[in-house]
Amino acid sequence: MEQARKYLGATPELMTSLHRAGLIEPFVRRNVQQKTGVHLYSKKDLDRPLSDLYSNFQDSEINQLTATNIMQTAKRANRSQVEVIKLILAGKLRNVWRRQNQSGIPALLFDASEVRSLLHKPQNVHTIGRVAEILRSTRSVVKALIKEGIFSTGTVPHIVSSKPIVVIPAPELAQFRREVCTIFDLARETGVHYSRVKRAIQAAEIEPALRSDRFSVDFYRRSELAYITVK
Image (cartoon, rainbow, N blue to C red; front, side):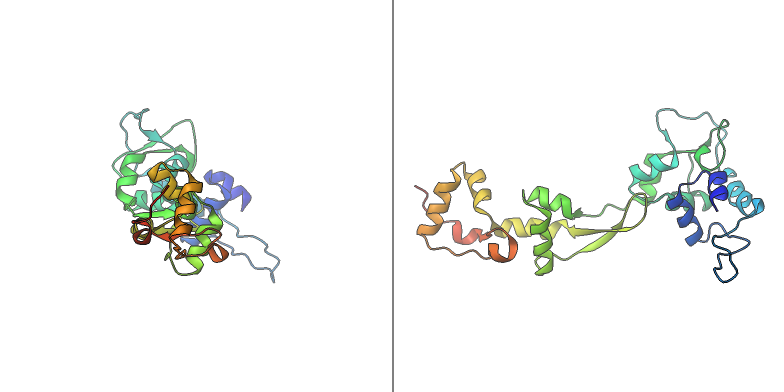
């Protein structure tokens, strides 16, 4: 399998993805009982998909400003390499070039903007890390909010490995920020020192809507903070 991977010029992750997607088929499958520890591929098994890929490339001069290899293209399109390959095989790409001084999949070059337009359906979501940044908090706080059902979650594929990444709908985060805030948030927004804001909240005897014993930080309802007097 290692020789087959090198022949295709594929990373281990891409080789696995190609096999799982049925884009390459071994002539001998892995079988531990028969002492075949890995899939075995014939040259014909590998030349067939390469021939299909090469049949779709353009004879026109490579646009050096926009042409990117498959790894760069997948990264810019925020999709997997296999998804890019499927676009070629489906004949959906107009701009595919082949570098004559290379072989295998790395010889193919793409217009990443074209690939992105076909594959990237804008999703109004944020990763857990991004939500933590927006809230000026930590991943553990965000995970606690998820655990308590404050945020719902979905998944999107990793740009290279295709493994699912947990994401949170952006509208839910926006609504959360409209409805609640921390003392630090209010201090930043009003320009009033944190300690003065905290004293005002304590004087008004306002209790947190979401307590720090469960979320590591206190969140207050903005509607209850609207009328506090900061001295």
